[in-house]
Image 1: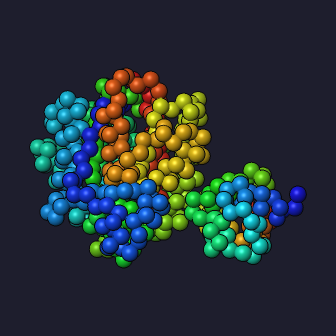
Image 2 (image 1 turned 60 degrees about the vertical axis):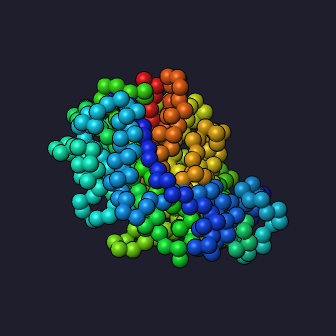
Image 3 (image 1 turned 30 degrees about the horizontal axis):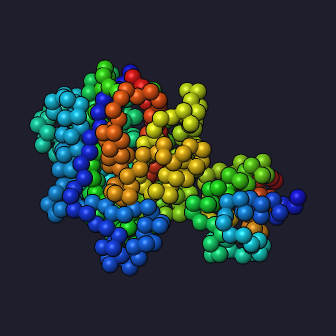
Length: 78
Length: 308
């Protein structure tokens, strides 16, 4: 499974929006994520990708699009 | 060793429903209910002080404990909404209770203040005997209708808890307190101003930190979340309480909730909830109790109490 596919899997697990968001579509503007679902997304990403995400990284800007999430995960792995 | 001996509370009689707030803030009533779970809140009348509400809650607590007002050897008073920078409401309330020499200390840390008070009382009871923890807030004077996100949340009220060194219905087994000052600007009441809250920061951090605090404390004592009899949590927002319950994989009914009736009364909310829960308890406890709170600072933590 590609990284983007894994990210979409987590997004669908925490959001009620059925469609796949475009890679650069704002997940907050579209209503896919909000302040209550972002912590779930982060926990899901931790479990899916085996990374630890510190609380201090929980800022919407890092997780606003699938592309940004992928870049963030790359930075955690490097 | 320290025990939870009694809880008490007081809320002022004036009710403010969502329709009234909708007229003031422009936020429609249905949205207020959906996003917060709050139906109404209480506001203190003009001329009533934070200490006045605290006195009423303290008297209720001492009456329920069956002890005289002179019994506390120490008073810890939590409030983020006191009328003065100093002295805080602790001294005024102690005087109104007739305590002329008993140390009365302010804890001006807002929402997590009552939890911090109980945790400190657990350690100080060995020295002072009975420690009266009071939390009182008049948040209605600290909000601006121009900031609807904040104005719709808050109400006024007071709660109290008597922590005793030798008697009570539950033994305080352990406490865990935390502070992360990197978020000091995320939730603050500037001098002379109104409450400023970055709701996104608060919800996101609280959603992670509260469950972690609880699970770590329980794990330290070999207790699973599902084995806890009741969770008494700061009543910030119904959706946040539900989220913590979901994260802990505990039915949300296990969390006592009265945020719909009183809104977020900051540090008072934990003790008001505890007092209303305790009033329903008719038999000796058989399961652990967990208290938890999160607020400005950020300060957060949890307290574990076991049946005495």
